Amino acid sequence: MAKRAVVVVTGGAQGIGRAIVDQFDEERGWQVAVLDIDQQALDELPETVWRYAGDVGDPTAVEGFARWLGERTDRVAVLINNAAVGFRHNMEETTITEWNRVLSVNLSGAYWMVRCLLPLLRANQGAAVIQIASTRALMSEPHTEAYSAAKGGLLALTHAMAVSLAPDRIRANAISPGWIVSEPWRKSSERHCPELSPADQVQHPSGRVGSPPDIARAVRFLADPANAFINGANLVIDGGMTIKMIYHGD
Image (cartoon, rainbow, N blue to C red; front, top):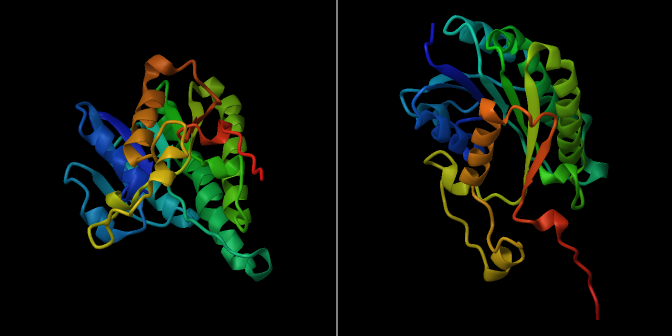
C-alpha cells in the first residue's frame, strides 16, 4: 500500500492533465495515479507515476481502474476529473452517438469516477474532488452544444456533490479554464507550439493566453487541506475574458 498521499488525475497524460501530474509528481509526499486512454502518452509519463490505460467514458473501465487502484492504496486524497473530449459540430449534423460520447466522457465519466472511488475518498478523512470544467459552461460560440452542455452539467454536478459528500468530509470544487495553449504539453509525436498573434494575447485583460501550469497551480491550491473552506465553488481562470465587455460599434 502507498505510504504517500495519492492523487488521481484522469486524462493526465497530455495537456492540462500532464501539467497537473507534473505539479504533484515534483513535490515530495504525493503518489500520482493516472487514468488515460492514450497508451503512447502514458508511456511518456515519469516512471514514478502509476499508469492505467482506460476510457473514462466506459463505466467498466472506470470500475476496473478503481479495483486496480484499491490494490495499491487504501485511500485517495485528491481526485482530479480532467479527462475530456472536444467537439464542435453543426446541430443538424450531430449524431446521437457523437452527443452521447461527449457527455459520457466529459460528464458521466466524472460522476462515475467519484462513485467508484468513494470508499477510497472517504478513507482519507478530508479528501478533495476537483473538476476541470470550462468557461464554455458560462458562454458559447456557435456549434458547441454538446461540449457546453457537458461542462455546464459538470458545474452543477460539482455543487451537488459538495452538499451530498459533506458528511464524508469530501469537498468538491471546479475550475473553468479559458483559452489554454496545451499543444506544447501533448505527447512527443503531436507536440508543437502554435503561433499566437499579438491580438490573441492582448485581448486578455491579463495580457496573455493561458498555459497548462496556470491551471495546475490552481488545482494544487484547491487540493491543499488548508483551503478546505472553499467548497462547491467554480474558479474561473481565463485571463479575465469572461468579465470583459465587448461591443461592436461603427
